[in-house]
Length: 408
Image 1 (tube, rainbow, N blue to C red):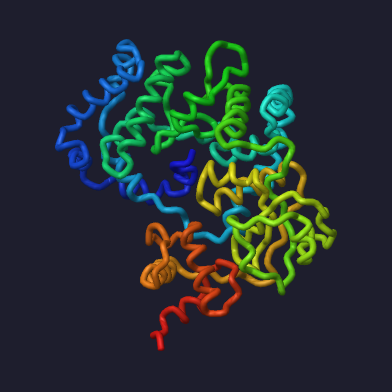
Image 2 (cartoon, helix red, strand yellow):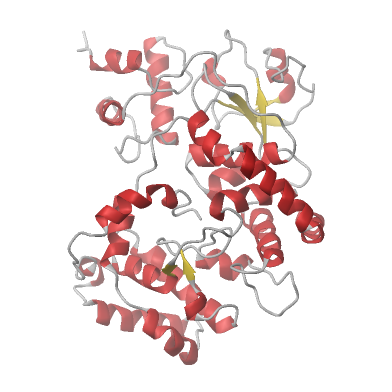
C-alpha cells in the first residue's frame, strides 16, 4: 500500500507510458549484466533458501514473466497536484462515508472482534478499505507475480521487489492463495486494503475460520488483517484519537504548525486554537501537532500520535490526511470547513522551480518532482522564516518571487 495507493489515479498516464517499446534488458545493469532468465533463476534460489518449497516455486513459475509495461508505469507515476480540499472532496465523498458506515453495520461482529483484539476503531479500518479498493470493487486486474518480478528486475527498487516476490511465493506456499488468484494493482499490491506481499504474509489473519488468509474475497479476513497491520505494524495507540479538525487564530505562531512539532492540547488551547464551532479544546496533556495541508488559509487539524500510522501507511501528505479525515467522517464528524476564499496553488512547473531554488539555497527537498512532500515543505518553512513571511510551509507566489530575486 505504501508503494502506490494513488496508482489508480494515474491510470491514464500510466497506460500511455505502457505503450512505449519494450526494453527487457533495462534492469540488467544492477544485476551484473544478467538476462532476465538468469536473474529469475537466482531469485528462485533465494526463495528456496528463504524456505519456499520447490512445489510452490514450480506452481508460480508460469506467472514469473517480465513485463516492460509494468516498469513504464512505475517510472511514470506521479501524484496528481490537487489541493487537499479538492482531493478529499472527491475521495472522502458522502457516498464513501455512507458505504463505510454500512460496512461497519454489515460486518459488525468482525469489526467488534478486531477492535477488542487490536484496539483499532472500525472507522479507521473502513476508511482505508474504502480508499484502497472501494470495499473490494477495484483491486486491480493485473497478475501480481508478473508485476513483482518485473519491478524486481528493474533497477529503481530492485531489492525491495525481490523481497516482495519472495513474500508472494511464501503466501502461495502457505496455501492462502494460488498464483492464478493473485490479481491486483500494477505495483504488486494485493487484496481489498492493498497489502504488499510482505505485509500480507506477516500480518494477514484468518478471521473467518476457514483455514486460509484471503484478503481478496473474505471481508472478515480483510477487517482482522488490516487491524493487525495497523496495530502491530504501524503501532496504533489504543483508545487515542488520530485527527481532529480545529480552527486556528490568524495571529498564531505559524512556525509551530508542523508534524515534527508536538504540544499538549492545553497549549494549543492557550494559543486560541478551538474546535471549528468555537468550543474550547480539552485542557489536557495529550500531545498533538497542528497540520495545515493547504497553509494557514486552508483547513486545520490537530494530528495526534496515531496520525503517524497514516503517514507510515502512505507517506503522501494529501493521501494520509484524506484517509484520517475520511475515518473521522465515518465516525460521525461533520464535513470540514472550506476556506472563505480559494487557496492559490502554484502550477507544477513553478513548484519544480521552487524546489530547484530551495536546493540552490542549500536545502534538501528529496526529488525535484513538483510534489511538495515533507522535505520540501520543511524547506519552504525555513525560507519563509528567513524572509519574514508567515511560516506555514505552504509554497506561495510571494515566496517564489522572493527566491527568484537576485541576492543583494
